[in-house]
Amino acid sequence: MFGKSTWIKLPRNVLVGHGVVDQVGAAVEELSLAGRPLLVTSPSPDDIAGDRVRDQFDDVATTTVSDASFSAVGEVIEAAEAAEATFLVALGGGKPIDISKMAADELGLGFVSVPTAASHDGIVSGRSSIPEGDTRHSVAADPPLAVIADTELMANAPWELTTAGCADIISNYTAVKDWRLARRLKNVEYSEYAGALSEMTAEMLVDNAGSIKQGLEESAWIVSKALVSSGVAMSIADSSRPASGAEHLFSHQLDRIAPGEALHGHQVGVGSIMTEYLHTGEKGAWRDIRDALRAIGAPTTAAGLGIDDETVVQALTTAHEIRDRYTILAGGVSEEAAREVASFTGVV
Ligand SMILES: NC(=O)C1=CN([C@@H]2O[C@H](COP(=O)(O)OP(=O)(O)OC[C@H]3O[C@@H](n4cnc5c(N)ncnc54)[C@H](OP(=O)(O)O)[C@@H]3O)[C@@H](O)[C@H]2O)C=CC1
Ligand SMILES: O=C(CO)COP(=O)(O)O
Ligand SMILES: [Zn+2]
Image 1 (spheres, rainbow, N blue to C red):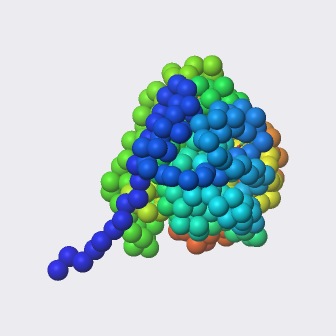
Image 2: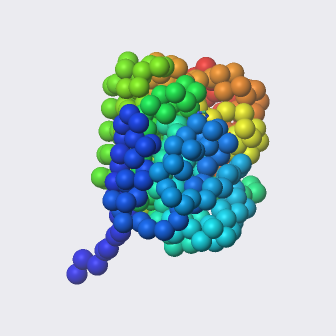
Image 3: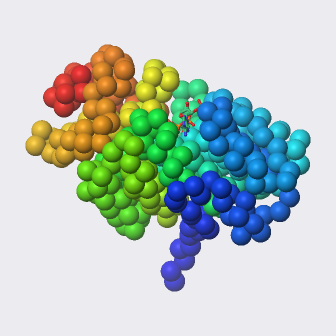
């Protein structure tokens, strides 16, 4: 008898468009969420759109987060309990959204994601990415009940946040390669649907790279749709595997040894150039990944990330230690090999 069962948790409503930040109240009503929301935000998003969100509620509390950590999750839980909040509204980049996702899950409350930057695919997914000591956890949590992605706000955000979101999507190419490798070598569970959706999302973004230009609201539109699609792939897989492979391990390791130097998406993009080379060699598709990143204006070198060459080599040789996830880096890359891949691909 076929005994498999699975849950695919997805947002119920996704609004993408010009000025939709003014529809947070309407979206909440449509979801039949009642009571008092806690708005979880960070300083810049609060300045930019905090009042526009607060004005849509008769009674709302606000808390501001400064870092993505387990202690910040605890602080948001305390703030929600103190405010007797009945649901959370996360306004901002990945930080407030990831933290709200975990806090809402812990509290058993729903949350609404209102991204102000198209900086990565965690804005939609049912996973939070939180560092702790020498490791980084990909924590399962319910996805947002609704995602309200205002393309006007996102188009006015610093351009590098959008190019980071693009690079996070382009990195899906190598993430799926790592996932397939893990299936072949370690019998890791693999979803054809999630793998195909993730790859198709990356392809569509690359095909539309010519329309992704600073100052064009259409760019925020294209990127937001891709981020939604990538988040859905993660929900189907019930894992971040479709969008996070060795290139993400490299980025997580950079976050540890060079914290705050570069954006998540930019780091995974550079990682993807190198891990594609490791997968397919000199004549492989690493140039296509590099060229796609160049076309949208994302960094393709250590210098472009603002990180020194030695740190990049160190991150590549130690990335496999960060998490028990089988990838092309399994067992580690020697320092000599890391220097070779980084210099051949022009990263250093
Ligand atoms: N769940 C998942 O699958 C994933 C989660 N992540 C997590 O997300 C975080 C990184 O995301 P990211 O979005 O880069 O982080 P942040 O939330 O820190 O946002 C990046 C920066 O952009 C600023 N900002 C956001 N929106 C605007 C805007 N509209 N205008 C001006 N400035 C703006 C923020 O301001 P301020 O400093 O005021 O906050 C911050 O300085 C990390 O914690 C990472 O672990 C990353 C990838 C995937
Ligand atoms: O960034 C992610 C997908 O783009 C998910 O990251 P994790 O590696 O933390 O699962
Ligand atoms: Zn990512």
